[in-house]
Image (cartoon, rainbow, N blue to C red; front, top):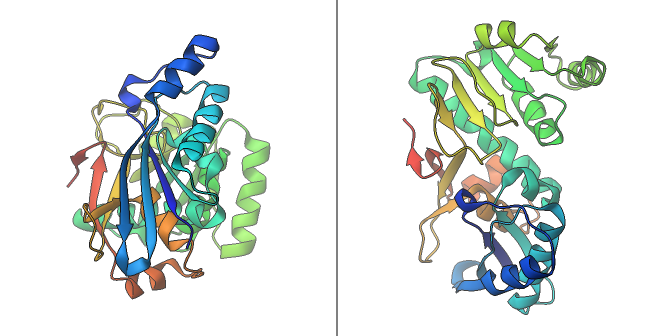
Length: 272
């Protein structure tokens, strides 16, 4: 397997700069944190800390420079910075693994509250955002009550037709936010958006630093059996490992490798 380049960043200190001085500053801040070897998998893991500069051009340059200092010809990228930007670098398996992790954690949180995903209303907002595509498809495998919330009704109706044809589920399509939030048992949001009091919300945009008057989630971790410094790994890191194992069935891959969802979190805080 190719070495994994695990790129992290402190997004709490995010900035947006592009110019000669910022390029110099960003290079000085980009450095290798750890070099590990996972013996059981015969795979090298390089953790690079990247500055939280989320100017699009600067971000691209910084990812390129992180690859350069890793001194590996071919690497499997595993980006854990600002998810809405990282997503553009995900391969298809990594996108599906994020979707699997989101829906699995939604399922578990509803179960704790003695509810079933099959019978609950899940609202996806903004349903037209690319990051939600695989999530909606994964959700359609388990839920019959899906609401696609978006201002682009033409585009979202086409998506609804595709879901109906592929999964036999007919999502509700609406641009009425008040209505959608009122009937929601759970909201999956690609936007950093304020929702009503008491909602359960999975934020794909992980830039939110504080919870509002809601139960918010933006991350999960996995328990792994391998002998490395950390026993719980992020969605991004597990996805980068599994995608190289040529296994398309995610549940089968997790079971075979004895990997289990460990914690559901908002930033570093575990959510019950």
